[in-house]
Length: 288
Image 1 (tube, rainbow, N blue to C red):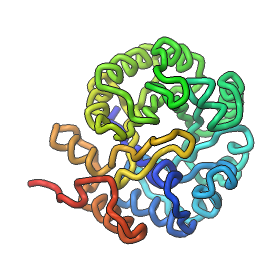
Image 2: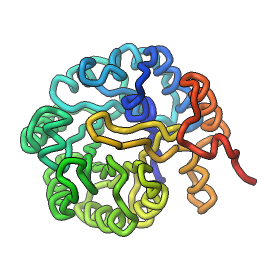
Image 3: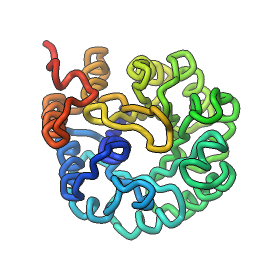
Image 4: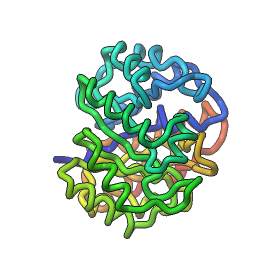
């Protein structure tokens, strides 16, 4: 099947920003990304607003989404309560459940052990009436436990009941060889496999290519390079969607995404935040 580019800017991109945008602005961001031809947009996260205030009002954001052929809209949940809110919207096409590869990260991110987080994920997957993705955070390294054993990540992926598993380099410590190995091993389980890369240490784009070469069918990115995890120290921005699209297209990998449209979205966001974003292509321009 063709490569699926998922822009996580409205969720992962905004959750680490000091400024909380109005729900109408967040909905407009979702709609602008869909208009640029993104095949998937992660629109919201159904989490407690006291924990992640940038994601408050998820239902209002969803209400402002304009349906568009060719774009799948997803929402992230951490537990059964989050899924109840997700299901009540009756709008989103895909649920993304997530848990950390390590016990410590799950305790910081969701106040539960890894086994408790896995039980929550299992409950959501069992109840899900829409396609589901399971994202394994800190799959390549944990800010609290350090190196993460590849075998444990593969075993965790095997236990998950989702047919799509995304491996997340939450703190940007992965390198291409490790990404390639882990993607190949998870694909060997018969699951559609994706990669969610952060460019914290400037390896994100090389890692995305390595994931693609290893057979990944889903690549996460964030418009303008926005992003990070509020519970992972120094986990800075994601791979920028427009930079990744430029790289892929120049490598001969069709994306179906309007690159000029993406650039305009980043320019719009720069005006909203009043600062330069992490992405580079929107400032340098496409070529030729």
